[in-house]
Length: 293
Image (cartoon, rainbow, N blue to C red; front, side, top):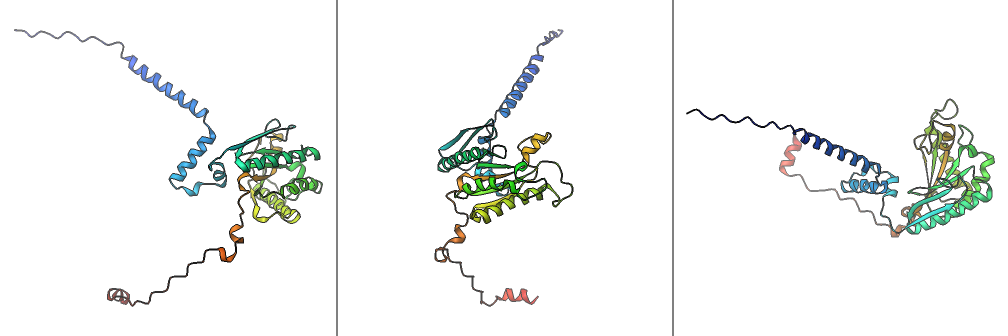
């Protein structure tokens, strides 16, 4: 008896839908990821990064800025100041989230400095802004320094006196930062923007210590060259904004005395552990055998 032939299988012409559905799913995931990246919360991302480094004990990658930016935050105080263009960070407004009691102290100080700038007519020479560290008082090169020189102009000493006389009365730590544009130095006293920016910062630190009796333990100096610009270096106006010296009033430093450890009375310091006495036990026979060879 002849076997019955199997009927031909039905051709499936809709198999393309499977591939099409996979393609649409991938596109959806791709654009969702793009949207998530474009709306990232920088504060939360920084806290996540800091937490990961802490969990894995990656101490070598931490910087002082990160340590100040991502420490635990208590009831934040907001600085909001209205003033003429140039005093604030954007359009005359000075706004930043700072920490609790220290944030209130910086808020009060910022208002006083703003009033001094306006009363002395220094709006074109000095600008104020805030970041995660605290208050930043920015001295423009055009008003305070000659091109290629680290010394403050004699004409600008009065403006520096107005600012430093007020800042010297505070207990906040201050970091003096030198910045330049990206144009290389040709000739002159300094070989690079690194040297120029650092020299300007240390010159202002020396002025603060010698002329205004600021505690050296509150001060530090840093030079960043052209590598931390505020504006685009492709325009003359942007380069002028980048040539500056910043006085950073660190918000969460008032309660901390950097020199407290060195100033503590000798009786309050933990006594040093005496060195372990040298062992007088004679070597064992095994040790003596190894020494003889």
